[in-house]
Length: 137
Image (cartoon, rainbow, N blue to C red; front, top):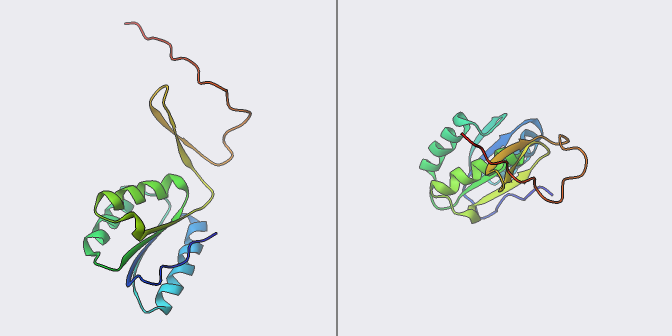
């Protein structure tokens, strides 16, 4: 279910990652414009350096009543949300909609993060991770 626009917001930042998310963001933008609230919108393919720089710039303009709405694959929404919180956004000011796509999986055995695209995993997952092989010099 797509989150509703927060009616108490007076200023909105809407970020969309990918084509499916862009459709969601357009819906949000129409609702925000009908409420006569300030709208800043950004659309791109991923939460890369350019996207996060744009978000930081928008966060610098944020005031009371500011809201962030994110739409896209988990692998893009999570870094954007983390960037916002790191730079002063309150989690209650953020709403997100996850679309199909990539997500990150952390492996505690090897301490790495792997980007998994939707449908890439095949077969059952092992019950226990394999033990790391000690490296010798």
